Image (cartoon, rainbow, N blue to C red; front, top):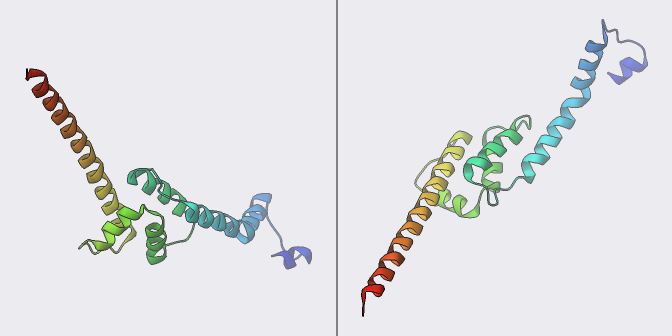
Amino acid sequence: MLENLEGELLEYENIGEFLADIRKEFGGRDEESVKVVELRRLEQERKTMEEFVQEFRRAARGSRYKGRPLVEEFKREINATIHQRLMESEWQLGSVEQWYDKPIALNRNWRESKREAEQLRERWEQGALTSRQQMP
């Protein structure tokens, strides 16, 4: 395109066509590179899996990662404990959608289990205190 432009061989009906050609020639690569960098910098950290998957999907759009490379990038960025549980499980995860769904389910179950354990601990402590208070 640049060679044709310098040689004055390109003709455009309007500025919109010209700008579209410029974006096609130069813009796509930069946008794709930015998306890839953004995708590679993601980490789950303290986010819930739902939050992380939403962020990951947003970053993956426009990165041109698909299939196995996208799955591998996702696996690299999720919480190590969840990653280990998925790898040790009997589930045969293939598609990236499966890799989104199963960790979300594991994370939800873990949070629910944690809430229930906390409630049981509180009930036990209240029961233990009540029993102690009744003793002479």
